[in-house]
Structures are given as structure tokens and as C-alpha cells.
Length: 294
Picture (cartoon, rainbow, N blue to C red):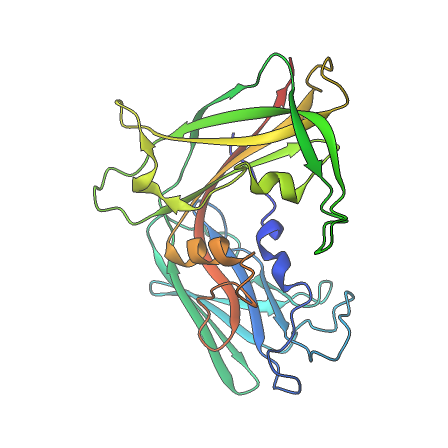
């Protein structure tokens, strides 16, 4: 049930990336996720733009003149820019599989600067089982429309009904008692209604130390999340829908990035890129898709 989950959910913060100070020199923004058991990935490079300048979705911020090298222990892999996708760099070798617990360094030479980041590949991870539960009837709720939510009294509130859907997943953690790995369980339901405001009161994802997750007597780890599916009336059944359940293991670099990517107190997430912005992280990932229905 190994699957590829769209990591773009975590890097959307950089879509309109700009400089902290108007007129400042551009800063390199790096996005690279190295996955245990997979080939070396594509790497994305962009540069920040001025605060007064418009964002160009066609790639004006793309960086195409950098030199990129990935060092895996004593092995060095060169990257080349992809002419068909400005800002993306592809590895010259695709015959390699990234092994677990190997350290790596990504180094970039750009405009006379050296930008780099270090991390390590975590052990592989696998979802053992998933349990989904929901009530027989929906519960009354006040639904807030996040599209009109503002500082005034016009918050777009309306009375309605929803089904809280509870999802529990189990997996095995590394045996080492001093393990410092983090995990990010994540629920992605495909439902016609989505409310950022409602999600704030539920738990569709979490970033936590793996050793701090709930532990079963058999040694497995457990996490429970909740999402909501709104319905039109108190008699309406739960609509059938698909749910993607994902579980990611990482080191501290990715965990800090994921935990701060939506922080209102920060302009950008915590970065492990020295001399630039963004994230270069080793991850292990598993995901599955299932159908939820009465």
C-alpha cells in the first residue's frame, strides 16, 4: 500500500515568496524531499522577488543557472536543469535507491554563493491497519464559511449538521528507545465541503515525536484523527467518499518545517537551508486510499 502523497501541500507557502525587505537581494528557495527506498528526487529551485513586484506563476522566479550536487556518503550525484520545467533539476543517475539511515548533503552554487543543507534518511514506515468510525446520525453544528470570515460580525455562520469521522491508524516504530524520529499522520478526505475553520477544531494531521505517540501492548504505535463531513439535514446519511490516509516519518528538519508552515507569527517556515530558504529533508512515506460509507 505504498503510495506517493502530494508533498506540494507542504510547500504551498512559497508560491508567492518575496523578500523580507523591499529591494533586498534575491534569496534562493530550495525544495527537496529524499524518500527512503526511492531514487534521488527532482529538486526545485526558485528565488524570492521584491515585495512590490507581482508574482509570475509562469516561472519568473525559477532558478535555472545553479550547480547542484547531492552527496550520499562518498557518492556524489550531479544534477542538471530540466529545460522543459524551469526551476527543476533532475539527477544524472536514476539507478540508485536511497538506503535508510544514510546522511546526505545537498550543495548548490548560485551567483557566487554556497547554499547547502544536511539531513538523513529515516527507516521505512508502513501503516499496519486503519479503523474508521462515525455516529449513526449527524450532530448539529455551527458551520463557518472561511471565505467570508473576517474581523467584522459577518462571519458567514450558519446552522447545519455534520458527521465527525474518527480515524485510527497503527504502525511499528524503530526499536531504539532513544529514537528521535518524528511522524506526521495526515487525513485527506475527498468531500465536497471543506472548511479551514472547522478543521481548526478537529485534527486531520499532527506533527509529533514518534516516541510520544500512543503505544499499544504489542509495541505498535497509534494515532487518532478526526475530520468532518457536513450534510443537509438531521436525517441525511453519511455520504460515501474516499479518504487518503498518509503517514510520514522524518527527522527534526522536516518536523520543524511542517509544524511552522502555517504559523501566523512567521513569514516563512523554519528552514534547514544554510544561505537560503526552504526545506531539504529525508522522509519515509506510506499512504493508502479507502472508501468510507455507511
